[in-house]
Image 1: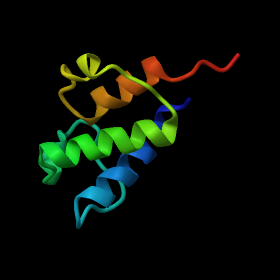
Image 2: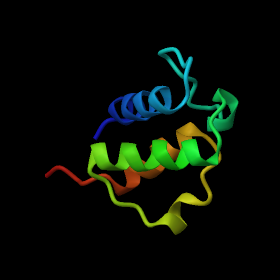
Image 3: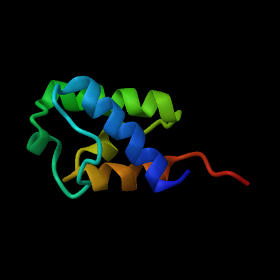
Image 4: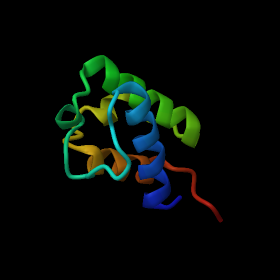
Length: 82
């Protein structure tokens, strides 16, 4: 799974959860920089995981500092294509 694909899915769920988000988010920013609260973040992460068909234990998500960190985590847990 490509980083760009993962980022687009996260961006879509961010825009769905937080009004006023334009296309082209900066992956180095935190979700809170876009106005997302903790409930929004849970919704964004769980929605993106469902769409990407990725399962990540909650304990693995606690150290994520920014959107790029979430993309990295999703890449690490994405199903490998043979």
